Length: 439
Image (cartoon, rainbow, N blue to C red; front, top):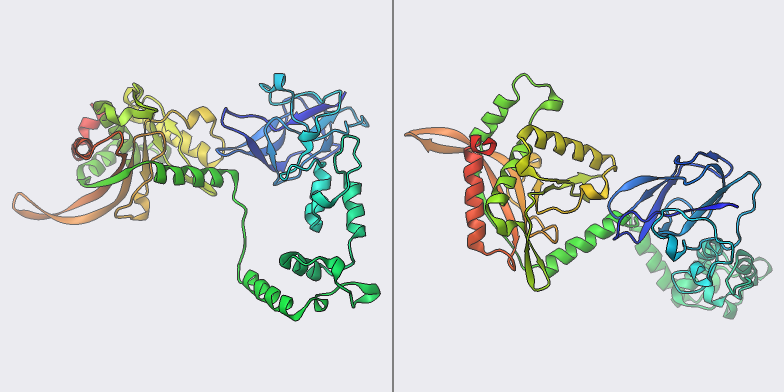
C-alpha cells in the first residue's frame, strides 16, 4: 500500500510549514531516509527525509505552498501503485508523534480537504479556482463526500459568461456580475469596453496605482513570526533603553595579543569577548536571568547567551549555553559554529531556545546608538555599537581612545533603572579591564 509522506512537526510550536523545493519528481526513486523535500518553518529551513523506500507516486502540493503539520504532501510506493483518492488528509491523532504516517485505508474526513473559507475541496480544485477567480461557494460539488473536485470547478468556469481576462478582473474589482453585461466582442465575449465609463475610470485609476507598485512579496514563515514577536515585544513589554559609553582601547589591544600567530578561523572576535563579558555580568546579577511567568518571577541558573544573526530573509538568535563554564576559545568556537549554521539554515530548535539574555551587535556598520527590541521572554537585550575614535586627556596628555556605546533595553516589570545602571557599570568595568573577563 502506498505510504503517505507528511509535513513534519518540528517542535511543539510548529503549526505549518512551507514547501521551499521538492528534491524529487514524480516517478523518481527514493531511498529510506533520503531527503525528498526542503521545507521552511518559522525558524529554520531543513530537508525532510522519506520514511520508506520506493517511487514518488504523487505530489499533493507544489513549491511555495503552506501546509499544516502532519498533512500528507505526497505518496511513495511501488511503480504503478494506485494513490488513495482522499488526498490531503492529516495523519491520525495517535500517530502525530511521527513526521510521516501511512495512507489511511478509509476515506479521510471531508474537513481535511477544507479550504481557508471552510469549503471542502481537493487541492487541485482549489488551485484551479484560485487561478481562474472562481468562488468555491458558487460551485456545485460532485465528490463522494460532498467535496468540490477539479471537474466541478472546470464546469463552473465553462458556465461563466465569456469575457476577456481584463474585463473579468475589472468586473471582480468593481463587484460587477458579468451575467448582467452584454458582450460586444466576438461571439458575444465581454470586453473592458462593455463596462460603464464610470466603472472603467475607477478601474483605470486602480490599475495605474497597481502599476506604480514595483513588486509585492509574500511574507515567509520566518518573516511572519519575526513581525509577530517584535510587535508583541514592543507592545506588551514596558521597555526602556539605557546607554553607556565604554573605552574599549584595552579590549582591542588584548584581542590583538590573543590573535597573534593564529590563522583566521581560530582568531577571537570582539563579539566573543563581549559574549563572555555579558555572561559574567548576567551571572553576577540574577535579575538579568529572570523571566516573568504569570504572577511569579522565575530565576534561572544557566548562563545562556543568545546572539542575533542576520540572514537573507530575517533574523535568528542561536544560543550559547553555559557561557560561564566555557573558556573564551570555546565560546569563540561555538559562536562561529552557530553563526555558520544560522546562515546555512541548518540550526536545530534546541540551538535557538532557552536564552537568558541576548546580544545584538551591529558595530560593524558603524552605528553610534540604537534601541534593540527584547527577545521574549528574556528580561533584557544588550546592543553593541560601532567603535569611534575620541580625544581624551590621560596623565596630562591628549591621546586617542577607542570608545563604544553599549545600549541595554530592559523589561521594566522585571528590572529597575538603578539595577540596569549597576549592570552596565559592571559590564563597562569588565570591558575596560579585559583581563578580568578571562579570570
